[in-house]
Amino acid sequence: MKVIVIGATGTIGRAVSEQLAARHEVIRVGRSGGQHQVDIADPASVEALFRRIGPADAVVVTAGNLHFGPLAELDADKMNVGLQHKLMGQVNVALAAQRHLNDGGSITLTSGIVGAEPIRYGINATTVNTAVDGFVRAAAIELPRGLRINVVDPSVLQESMKAYGPYFHGFEPVPASRVAQAYSRSVDGLQTGKVYRVW
Image (cartoon, rainbow, N blue to C red):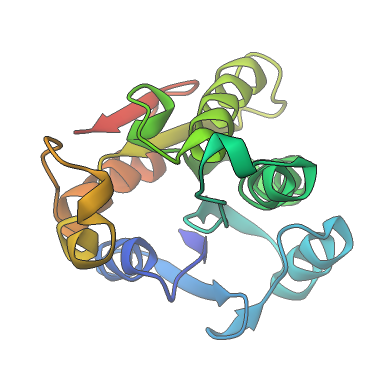
């Protein structure tokens, strides 16, 4: 299969690309690196990416910016960081993918544990991750041509604990290689509308 991995230069994206490349043709996409570049917050950029790459069998998104900060300092601009990038960015990819993927293709998005288990300063992340999960469950019942859509919902990564550990006391971190297994299940499996929790 030909699989597009958006966010391939990040920690999860690298692990996913490595696992999938053992049996598929992986097209690595980043914001500024990779084989191709895309701004997922810009629908025109997403559409152009699919046109450049041509027909594919799956797309995986492991990208998406979020804002972290206290409720007292939250405003519309800060909320829009996650709403426009991690939420609408992934929605933009899914909307374009339904037109460009081959019949029976799959879409895999990314949410995160704070959608169900909020943390201090994570209001933007909780809001966005919950919305991504909801989008996937609803989109799954309407996608045409046998297309499937799922979402991977990981805990904090072991590789990220140095940077994010103070926000995740009491959470069990997981290695990126284990998280990548859930993306493999989504790409290579048959399920749709599934939230794969890796906690």
